[in-house]
Length: 89
Image 1 (cartoon, rainbow, N blue to C red):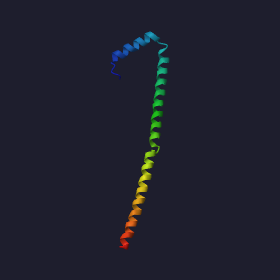
Image 2: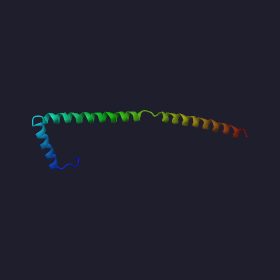
Image 3: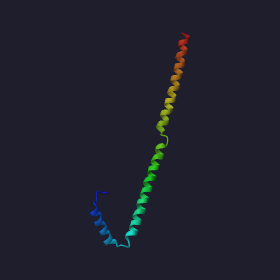
Image 4: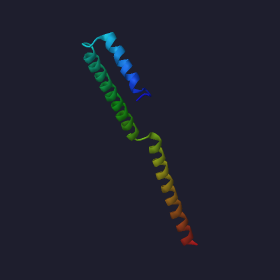
C-alpha cells in the first residue's frame, strides 16, 4: 500500500498518537472514513453521469443515419428509372 513498509506505518501511527493523543484518534479516523466515503460516492456519481451522457444519441450519428436513408432512397429511385428505361428499349 503506497510503497510503505510495516515499520514506517507503525512509526507514522506513533507520531500521530503523540501529536493528537489517544482520545482524538477515533474522531480523526471517523472523519477520514466519512471523507473517503464522500469521495467514493462523488466518483460513482461522475461515472454514472459520463455513462448517461455517452448513451445520449450523438447528433452526428443522427445526421449520418438521415444521410444514409436519403442516399438509399435516391439509389432506389435511380434503379427504378434505369429499369423502366431498359424495359422501353
